[in-house]
Length: 349
Image (cartoon, rainbow, N blue to C red; front, side):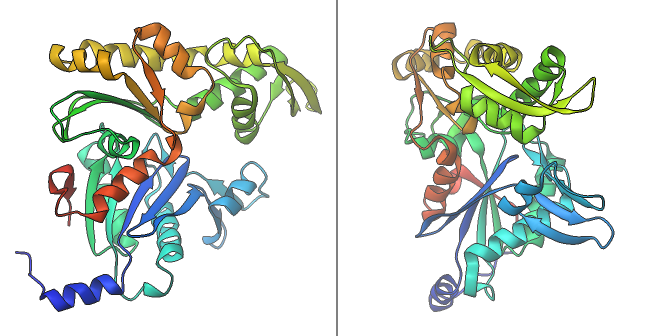
C-alpha cells in the first residue's frame, strides 16, 4: 500500500532531488532532468580492468578506447539490441551518469522514467527495472519508446487520429502507429544502426580484403553513407588491416559502394514498415495517408532514407528536427507532469 506523504514533505523532497528521464540506448544514453532539459548525452560504453574488475572509464572516454585497449582492459557495450546484455556494467554506467546529473542532490533519490522498446519481454523489463533501482532510483516508471518518440516529435498522441512513428536507433528499429495515448500497432526489429555498421565492415572485408573497426565503419556510414542515390559521388579514404598480408593499408571507397553495402539492413527495415502498414486498421491508415510517417533516432539521419521510404510506401515522410533526442524529449515532457500523463507510463516500483 502506497504511503501518502504530507504536501510540505513532498515539496521538500522535490527541492532536493532531480527527477530524470532516461533513454537507455544501445549506442547512446541520454538523460533529461526535470525543469532543465537534456543534461547528459554519452555513449553507452564501459571500459573495465579484467584483472582488478575496476571500472577504467565510462562514456566518451570509454568510446575512445574501443578497439584500442591493451590486454587486461576491455571496452564493452553493455546494451545489445535495445536491451541489457550485461547487468553489472549497466548498473555502473547508470550510477555514474545519474551521479553526473544529480550533482549535490544525491542524498534524495530521484524519480526515474525509463524508455523501453515496444517488443521488450517481461524478463528484459525486470532487468531494466533492477538496473535503475540499483543505480539509486526512488520510483521507477516505464514508457514505451514509440509513445515517447511521438511526443518528442510533437505528434498529438492523445487525439483519436493515427500517427506513424519510426525510431531507428543503434540496436532496434521501432515502428508504431499511435492513437488515443496508446500503441495501436507496433513492430520492433533488431535491425538498426549497429547492423548498418556491421554491413559496412563485412563489405570492405569481402570486396577490399580490408578489416576495419566498428568506429571506422560508423564514421564511413556517417560521412558518405546513404540509402538513396543522391546523384553526387563522394569518396573517402578508409584505413584498416589487409586480410591477406596483415599489414595496415588504405583504400578509397565511394558513396555508391557504401550504399550498396547498406542495401540489406535497409531493405529489412523497409519490409518491416510495409508489414506494419498492412496491419494498420483502415481508419488509421487513412490518417497516415494525410499525416505521413515521422522518422527519428540516429539512423533516421542516414542521407536519403526518407526519400527511399517515401518511394517504397508512396506516403509523405518527415525526419524529426531533433531526431536523436526525440525519445528522451518525449519522456521528459511526460516527466514534467507525471500525474497528468499517468496513462502513458507504467509504474514498476
